[in-house]
Amino acid sequence: MTVIPNIVILTGAGISAESGIATFRGPGGLWEGHRVEDVCTPEALAADPNLVHLFYDRRRAALADVVPNAAHAALARLDRAWSGELLIVTQNVDDLHERAGAVRLLHMHGALKQALCAGCGERFDWQGDLPPGTACPACATRALRPDIVFFGEIPYHMDRIEAALAEADLFVSIGTSGAVYPAAGFVRMAREYGGATLELNLDRSEGSGWFDESRLGPAGQLVPEWVEQMLSR
Ligand code: NAD
Ligand code: ZN
Image (cartoon, rainbow, N blue to C red; front, side):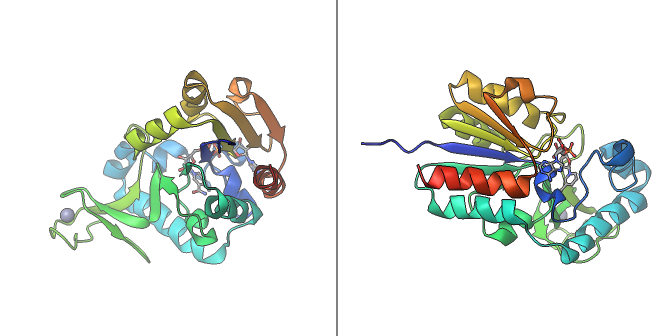
């Protein structure tokens, strides 16, 4: 009897780059022209809520102009076809994995198309702009914010992710710089639990040395190739 490996896949901004969404550390280390600390911290939200809300309004609106690429499509195909355990953990706040059809998916850093109430903690699907002071549909507190995990906040679903890593025979990291923790530590966790580790990235990342194998190139090429390899084993 052949045992089907359990797979955990971590994706980062690099998998959406070929769809036309800028990565985090674009030219000059800026995200869409902004310093990360000005748009991605609780302090920034408190100091300048208009700027932070507007920044995510623009990112949310820009989703209408992009489509999933071959890498998202390949992962969705693997998700459908793989009979072993499989979990896609994305650091991305875009919705391209789900639009490609991925189902076994967790957004560990939140999602642009969701709003979070800072009052009652409820989450809501959100389309369109989300100005500061928008009332929560559940508790009416004027404290809705983009459902984005800022630096200094704890990522979502960590228990489920760690449980999946503990059972993973293979951990694959795609298009992430290995600079943002705790995601950057998943490769070491997977290794400690005895899983094999593979990196697919445009260039060597900060964490490259931790992987059993690194394949360098664009996700739109490498991911479909890897998925084909997995499905034809
Ligand atoms: P990052 O920008 O720090 O790193 C991106 C990595 O992808 C780099 O190593 C780069 O070499 C690689 N890359 C670039 N183009 C690629 C391609 N075509 N194919 C393969 N690899 C490519 O991104 P990160 O590690 O995901 O940073 C984490 C933070 O950035 C997350 O918190 C995330 O929420 C946020 N973010 C998300 C989005 C999005 O949702 N699409 C976009 C920008 C930033
Ligand atoms: Zn509320």
